[in-house]
Length: 240
Image (tube, rainbow, N blue to C red):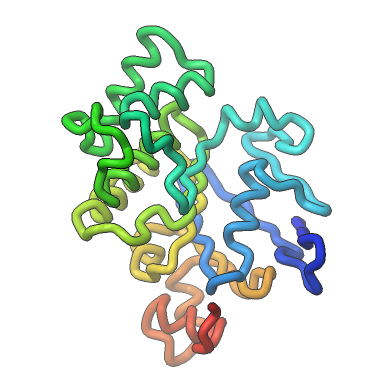
């Protein structure tokens, strides 16, 4: 089980955190602001070290073998992780080279990813000139350029137009069908209910519910959907 306390904090950001996901599964990690979702993603993607606990990806311990593990996963962070003065194509080529792609294989994979997110005609635009939706789609493409086995997505559809959001959700379903596993955080409950085969609700650093969305809803009388369940478990008080 993972545990993490930040220096100077009076309570853990993450405590007794324990999940597992299968091949081709989208696992939803839901929680209010400050609940510990991004901390969990950061630890699982080797950006932070936990105080205790371990993370394995396809049998590889990321704390012992981080370089080997990083080839197995992709990260699509909430903040756009692209170089603004480079073009979309240049960004994908750069991240592809970081994962060891080169030559014709790199060019082919960059072209595939551009087509996958509908940016082949915008590939030579500098990122800072792109719309919010285009940046989000390019952010996804950068996370999958090396064909990861598991993908960590931290609110990948936040703040974008309906068309880009719809495309991203459709493409995640395609990735799922191809066998890519995903851990997905979102504040959009309808996304989680339609995409995720299982979810965990986290609050104040602890998982307070975990299981199949429909089964969790049925276990709580008066809850019609995941939105109702989320508010019942975490409360209606603002988390600023």
